[in-house]
Length: 209
Image 1 (cartoon, rainbow, N blue to C red):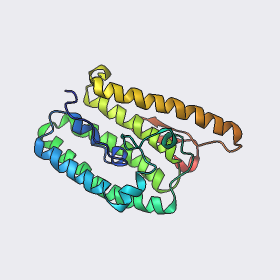
Image 2 (cartoon, one colour; image 1 turned 120 degrees about the vertical axis):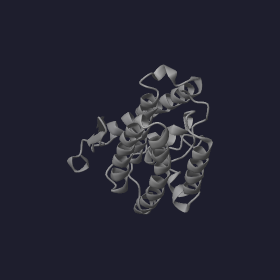
Image 3 (cartoon, rainbow, N blue to C red; image 1 turned 180 degrees about the vertical axis):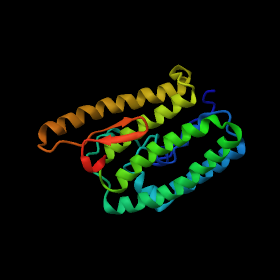
Image 4 (cartoon, one colour; image 1 turned 30 degrees about the vertical axis):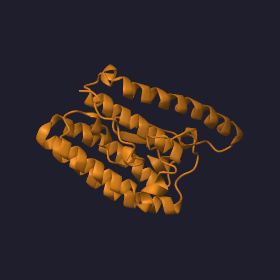
């Protein structure tokens, strides 16, 4: 079931549609892939997409340590853009849900779970409750879980391309950990932390949980 197609670089769609990883699987029809790719591309090309791409994880060459160590929430303008972007992303998500309902009903629950996680990240980002770096990390964790779920729990079936991509991301995560630790040592204000419990997100700040 592995990756004959390169995963799309989709900035926030990677976190918000709950369906990007579907593109790596061979059971996606050509027509569905085309519709999904068009939907994403149009969203990324909007003013909102371009603005958000400067800070949110895109799974492409624009990603770096600074995105993972970003200690600040989205600005008011960015939060407004995120809401508009998310509304379009939900339409992209539905393309995949509709396809899965017809071709592989067992996957519908997996996409729904990922969508729930994605929406939890979106809600906190849109309300300025968590820093961007933390949101990007949570998105990476959630998408990796979807990949494993779609591979029936076999992480070793993801293939060499995906494995290499994840190793590169892990290196960036480790570098950002060092930056975050250094910044935290100099700050008197604890940074928020969030963890997944199933598909629900729990954060250290009671206003975020």
